[in-house]
Image (cartoon, rainbow, N blue to C red; front, side):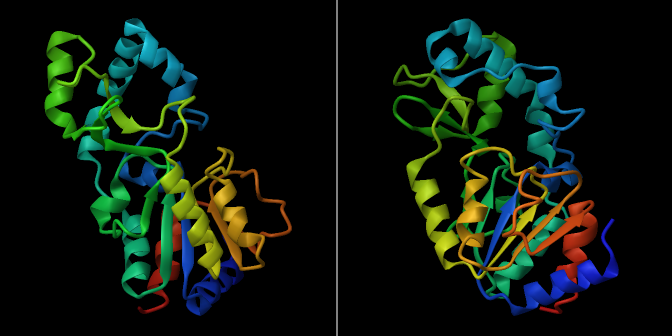
Length: 254
């Protein structure tokens, strides 16, 4: 766990910053009951992901993908933001956030109140279903229920395949989201990475775009990250994000 001197340094860095880029990963969501995908007990230890090109060309792959998404849907539907999400919102309302860039697909930053113009969900969201042909977006619950009853992968009225609006393996990130994230990295005067192993590219490259400019860079995570030993890192705190970040924000008395 962190020392009091590390926590004090984090508080001081947050106090000085006026345009913070927050980057979040699975370690922020586990406190809300969302399963980790890459951890020791992660989902990918027992399930193989369906790649996007397989989803688009194979009914069997689409069925497998929808099965997987249906299995996880109740946890996503019922999850509520936790203290870390709330702390990020508190920083934004104090005018100290330039952007919140997340790898998470649970929609919890939005539920907590992070503004749409600040939020970048690089890997998409489970909170919507998207047609892969016409782009129409729909509420998930009725579509999941229809799949549960019929066991047929759902199709849009245009004939295109419906898929939860997350970025699948082998699917490109949205150019507009990457461009917005890169612009935020150019404007940030501090970077804070919360609960990410910083191992998934190109998402994790965003933190270094800012840190390479010489702005303070703090990493809080339980377990090693791929960026721990980089010279750009100002502060590395080991431990549970929920136990470390919200108290630091509270200490600012915003």
